Length: 196
Ligand code: SAH
Image (cartoon, rainbow, N blue to C red; front, side, top):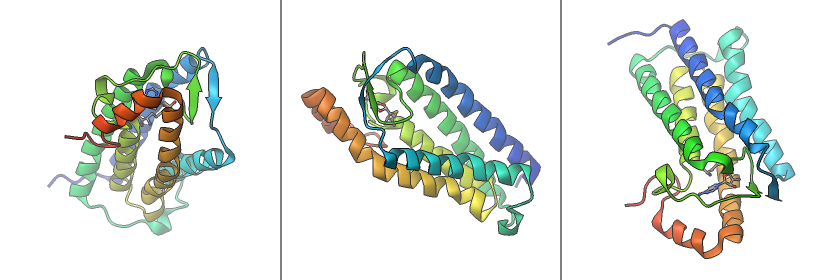
């Protein structure tokens, strides 16, 4: 079995994070052109976004660049690390594809935009929340790549909170905006995985 050093795992982790940033950055720029008409950015949403930033970004980066969290390390398990690399690549692809297919309708939070269209094609044809699927995979990869109880698992915990407290509200907002079209779409799709 190939053994991957901790330094290599940290480099792969940071390279992936740069990849996620490069995929999302143009969409942050684009969204400024498409005005918000329905805004569900509550205090709860703001707190959840803060938790996710701590769990998926700040704690792993503290682990990668400082020795502060080393007390919570555990030994490397190479087959888990290799699985982590594969899951990370898959999540990057899904993250890119869902941003690409959602186009100008993307928001980091719950919002409807002026020229919002309901996307039901591409990766959205069979799955309603492929971007969340990609973020779940990203968090699983974080746990598999970083052999540290805090920095490894903080992603899954913080994203689970965001996901479970947000997804019903997001679907409610989409139903209010798109009515029967979204209802029909819900019947033909799965939330995170395709419905067969
Ligand atoms: N939940 C989706 C999108 C995440 S981005 C996913 O995981 O792929 C969040 C924003 O996307 C929401 O504010 C909503 O306005 C928008 N959105 C979600 N599903 C959409 C769809 N099928 N078509 C258009 N916009 C959508």
